[in-house]
Amino acid sequence: MGALDYLKEQLAELEAQRLALHPRTLEGPTGARARFDGREVVNLASNNYLGLANHPRMNAAAARAASELGAGTGAVRTIAGTMALHRELERRFAAFKHAESALMFQSGFTANAGTVQAILTPEDVIVSDRLNHASIIDGARLSKAEIKVFEHRDAGHADRLLAETARPGRRQLLITDGVFSMDGDIAPLPELVEVAERHGAIMMVDDAHASGVLGRGGAGTVDHFGLHGRVDVQVGTLSKAIGVLGGFIAGPRHLTEWLENRGRPYLFSTSAPPAIVAACIEALDIIRDEPERIERLWDNTRWFKAGLHELGFDTGASETPITPVIIGEEERTQDFARRLFEEGVFTPAIVYPTVPRGQARVRTIVTAEHTQEDLGRALEVFERVGKELRVL
Image 1 (cartoon, rainbow, N blue to C red):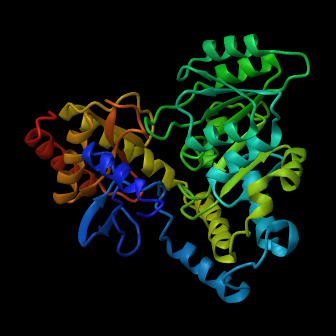
Image 2: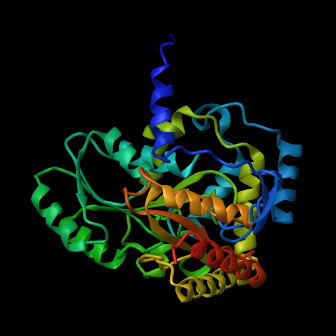
Image 3: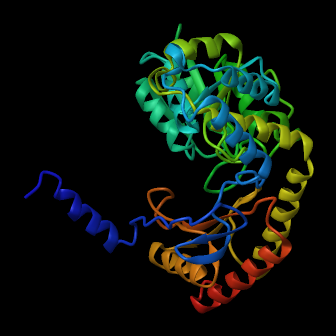
């Protein structure tokens, strides 16, 4: 018997509970319509908000950089892996976020986890929204700081927790997602910023799903609410609206300089290859040159949401292109997602532990690339399968 055989039993338990994940395989480029597991589908599962992941300008920039600068950098940033391209992207991203400085990480996950860990000690405290992303939770645990959780979007509760945990010389971090990835609702950032300022707390926002989506030119939640200069740490990602890979921290220069010295993922992982960095720079150019992409994203979002509501689906508190269709029970949700796929619409089931038990859903994300024909086709399938499985 092998030392890891116990995992077979645990996997069997997941299968019995219909909680096991079986990722589908993308066969070709991603897009509003794509091919998964041999089937052409309307793709409502991607974070490719602005349709940039397969944009010809992005592909050309990536190919040119790989040809001229190589497939990889061969080192971590702090030894021999910082290229002029990395510095240029950081300058561009800081301007995009209206921040003094920015620093690229290997992913949004490492940006969150590495920063929280680096700026706090076990003597400090973190006050975190109950529905914050897993990377925030892991960073909080790695910091060994005291962790207090406030009820979702409840600034008053956050205020009370900061008051209760205040100590002389103790740093406090108030942290929230900008847009919540499973529900599509937006943080009450103005109220949270006021709470942070009242207590002298560090204010940090994970804007992974807001960058390129909310605010002028896609600048994010801080811009959406007009709070420039009042949020200490902005987290961004390059793998969603930007369409490539990587994460960012934007804020004052002394923050990014500290992370260059103490941000463990930054210090101990090889830097992003030239093709990735060049494509990200090109994405920022496209967002600047083609503002109609964000307008089209929101037009599609409003149209599709209205269609789901008219059919009678429960979309929770969504305010953004992330629109969950909440089914509730795990097995029925898995069946719903499977039947949607068989009928030509891809939107996977999201079940426990990603969401609480009894809150299983399929999470739809429309993009700027979807046509009304795509979305109309999806609504027809949602209606047909919903009635078949008695979800409607």
